[in-house]
Amino acid sequence: MKLNRLFKLLLPGIVVLLGFTACGSESKDTHHEGHDHQHETVPAQAEDIAETPVAKISNEQVQVLLDGYLPIKDALVKTDAKAAQKAASEFAEKLSEEAFAAIKDVAGQVAATDDVEAQRTSFEVLSEKVYEVVKTADVTAPIYKQYCPMAFDNKGAFWLSSEKEIRNPYFGDKMLTCGMVKETIAKQ
Image (cartoon, rainbow, N blue to C red; front, top):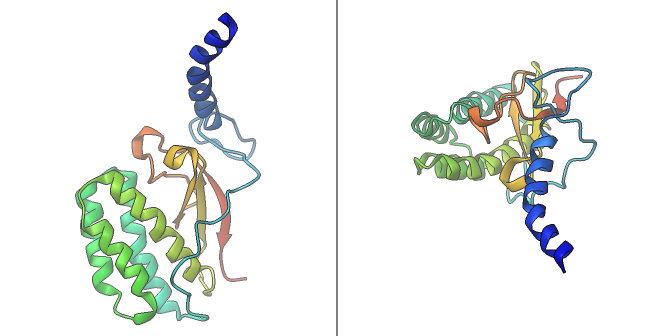
């Protein structure tokens, strides 16, 4: 009986400790202020994305997507809700093509709130939608699909970046370098 009670008291602390340990492992390839991850598996993609990406999009369309998406990511890295709102609003305005209607809708959700946590939740969906389109394109400069397993209560989430260096939009300065590159998207 006493062991059971002791276990119940210690379990929450053990869970928290394990969570922090997940971002504390060192990588022999890169070092991000003690917050590298070397997990071999990534959870399955989120439920079916409603938008079917265009089979082939132009370089100009890819550039519009990335030029609109990346400033939102950067604002969330800084935990700047107002900048994220502004960037998302400008991005939504630029997306006039019907093929990108779902992306425009999600960007509008980010723009509609000044709650940074709500923005981050919408940004996760935005990242999925932009990734689905960008991965089919002939991108000339590398785009990095980066992943943090601790995002959203350890559910994990990814984002896209034009830089290999990890700057986590889901935690901002709380865990700025928590994450890893999972994929490099570039023209072969």
